[in-house]
Image 1 (cartoon, rainbow, N blue to C red):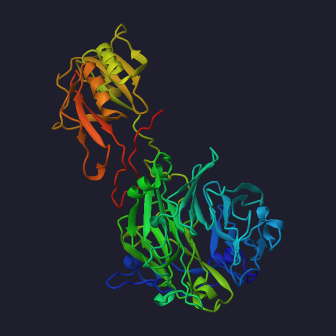
Image 2 (spheres, rainbow, N blue to C red):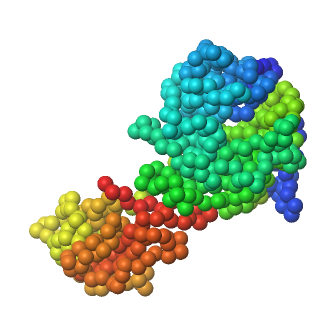
Image 3 (tube, one colour):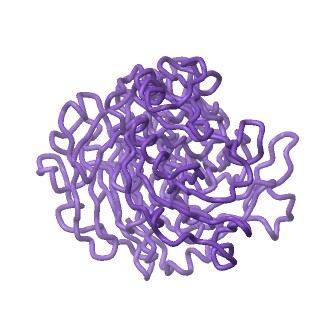
Length: 567
């Protein structure tokens, strides 16, 4: 590996920059309707004399290059770090970068296929553990490394039931303690819980994680990739992304389409692959791509190998060109760093012998970088997804902590909630024997009207959900609780396991029920999804709901509905 004598600062400042060609689709304006002086510039960030298909950048500014071991490109350290003087250093060094056939692969890189940096600023490396001759026993692993010191922090190895014969780990994303990995060999998604040290394999070999039979992988200009014998590549679930909240997992084969599923469902081991398949959404049909990235506003960035450009797929399904450049030969894994710079290696994979009949790749391999604009063609662009939810201004709001109701008699209200729902009293912070609260001082805090007196106040816990606060107030203006045709909050819903038993208990406690239960419809339709309404003795409406089947979310939804779990 060698690079021209330039500092990282000079490289990222565009010392080797050339002009770019903004992509313009038929009938589509140039990004943001701006002139060339305001358009993002594609610059050379690094050059390599060995094949490079991955890049990651730490918050400290270290740039790492992934150098896979492919047929005709077997001499490689696997992973290097770009130093301040422009030179590269095998990383983390020693035997990790010195593997060759016959050497123990457990602490050495056999075939690095992906590199990434997440919120903790450590480097994650996916080693497929394969060579042109086939898999190397003990070679497949995921390695987490201190980006500054090179200390190996974690090595994840999976059992045969997680990586069966033919499996090939491709790329990964991490959110909090959960690691998600695509398998491009057989098709499937691997989910590993770092805290519990538990791993499951999902949608294994399912058509939704495999390359569609009718699709072919293409290179620049639409050329179909094939080796000298006419054999075409069949790469299965490859690209992988998580949204900023970790609620949705996206994946794609190089030929598309892009699909997604709610991560809550992937983590629910009660659901088998058939149930999961029903919840998978197909987001978009796409040209052949080499890599993806995602920002905090839900935009997917696609490295379009057919047009040598980067395209943005918005949450609403628009495909907006960001930048095109003929130097983007087989643009591969995209990386967005904490400074909103987009990095993309030009891997030249379309010119390998397995894709072109003969190896037509030529050094140097280049990694490009551009500063992301705030918006393109009216589409706002976000920050890097790091594996931790971003602060969105109101993002500090965790959720609804309690709901409050005024009742005619606080103690009667407590007894009803205890009998109907199994609620438990947490505390009475204004007992009926205490001095009542009234006057301007109280009004400043909670808008208690003049002439009204607060007699009682208590907090109750209701299952694994929001708490309930009860008020008893003298001087109530109306004695009828809000109805559905009144303004403001008109009911709250409780999730139950057995809707019939829950409704019977509610009725025995003194509640009144409407006819039901009824099946939910539209986006909530599914076996076991039912609801029924009841009214408390003081008139508040409560909905009982069971949600046993996955919900169907709108294409632009960035989060999934929160549903209380048992606990």
